[in-house]
Amino acid sequence: MGTHLVLLGAPGAGKGTQVGRLQGDLGLVHIAAGDLLRKAVKEKTLLGQKAEKFIKQGRLVSDAIVLELLEDKIRGERKGFILDGFPRNLFQARKLDEILDGQNRKLDLVINLEVKESVIIERLNGRLVCSGCGRVYNKENLGDFSSTCRVCGASFFQRDDDNPEAIKERIKTYLRHTYPLISYYREKNILYNIEGEQSPKEITQQILNFLSKKGKS
Ligand code: ADP
Image 1 (cartoon, rainbow, N blue to C red):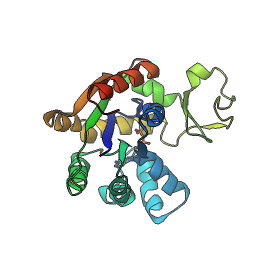
Image 2: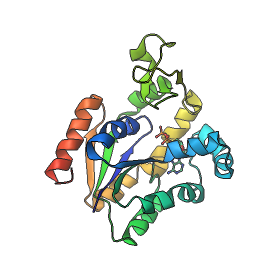
Image 3: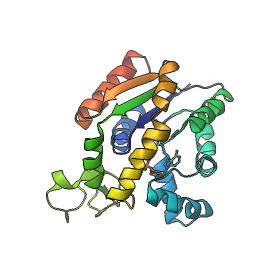
């Protein structure tokens, strides 16, 4: 049976960056709640229209909408996955357990990226995303804002919710709803904490080493 991972961490903790790096190495399917929601918004589907204002404000979209978007995907990925942005509250975490239990599967590991608030705010304010491949950059280390993606050459955009007001709300939402998942998974003995202020490369290496020790890669 495949490996089932969850990446946990505040907005801007580096979940997306790590998934991009791990996906190839582990051969797992990436299921990103935020990406799927933004796609629905862009395509103006019914779900997307309902979700849009919550995303812009940095609040959680309703569990019903998120589950409608994700449940079948989670059920369908029988060979394993990396979940990013889901679960984001206890209800979603219990629902995920229920879905997997019903298929005689279980979560193998929850990786929690720990980053302090000041760093998160700095990262999110400076974040630029490639419109072609979705790779994440930061204004600071780009130097020139008008430059294009080093990998695919497409232009950058700034996410609608990467503005100071929404960032403040997203951190508040994280602390209130998502942070409690750390103890939820610690009690299940599947939590692995990583210091998220190390370089992306160091973090990937640490995750891969841990997985190989557990015989999961
Ligand atoms: P980040 O981790 O940088 O905050 P994401 O791309 O994961 O960004 O999510 C963007 C937004 O999409 C969230 O702020 C929230 O509004 C919505 N969202 C994503 N995942 C969920 C979820 N599991 N439940 C409710 N809302 C979600």
